[in-house]
Image 1 (tube, rainbow, N blue to C red):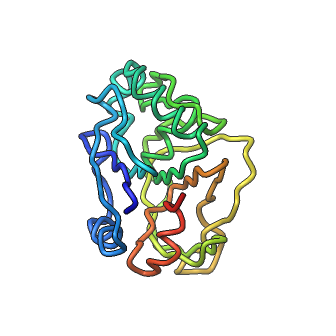
Image 2: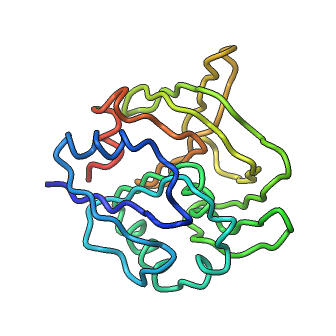
Length: 194
């Protein structure tokens, strides 16, 4: 079956637990790894970088060159990678915390982000992807600058206005949205299938 590597440590721990249940119900084997502590990726077909607080661990994430190289190799091999919120920030070229301290990240997507003092976005959204429609929520304190054109935009539930951008580069799909896989397991599965 499909082996999905899921980032899980103090930098990446914010996700719908039901997402893991959904992936298991679809027959996937989940293998947990730590971008903070592990120097290498486990042997997996695809990756899930969930939300969290990478801005609190900038130097540790930046300094783990083994893991950064392993994640770049995974992406260069055209293997699926799904990144949400904190995971999205980790895939950028650099990230700055609230104090303005900036550190290099993975560089899988062009652009940079910086933490803001106030909440930037909050609420429920739906997004139509090539894989199907998925719903989720957004909650973040950072602003992102990227030259990359979005694949799609979320739609805010409360007023129908455009919401968060979803970016795609090769098999990497990344967004501020925390998508709820159980709402459309078929669409979610396609994000991880080789």
